[in-house]
Length: 155
Image 1 (cartoon, rainbow, N blue to C red):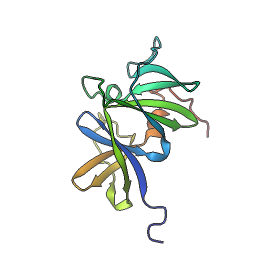
Image 2: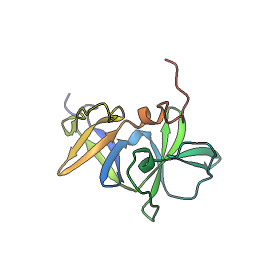
Image 3: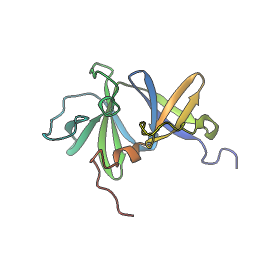
Image 4: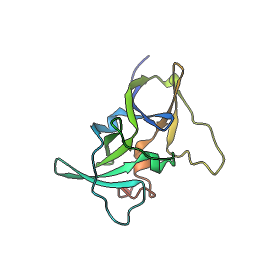
């Protein structure tokens, strides 16, 4: 039974001074940041849309979404194209690090904070050597009502 469907792979990326991870199975591709077409009356964290091989893809800037200070776009800025809830979305991050396989022992439960900090989208913390990864439940985040990107799915 050991090792049977227990380890999970995460794509790691950087936002500000922190390293995050999302499940690799949600990732469709990684692209360099390119200009987007802005859409009026969208929240500030939605940069706009791009045309990806005939598919209109909304682009979310995660640094703005997570209130991580000044946003700068440089040669390291990338867009991670995700497939979430049968919808293609893009998220802008400062840079992509690598793909890591984490065992259950390396994934710790996120600590509880006061009511002022929303940890609903944090699935846990990944401990890799001297690194600490914030593991984001990207499906829960992108399908949340505040994102308004994906229609809520009736269960």
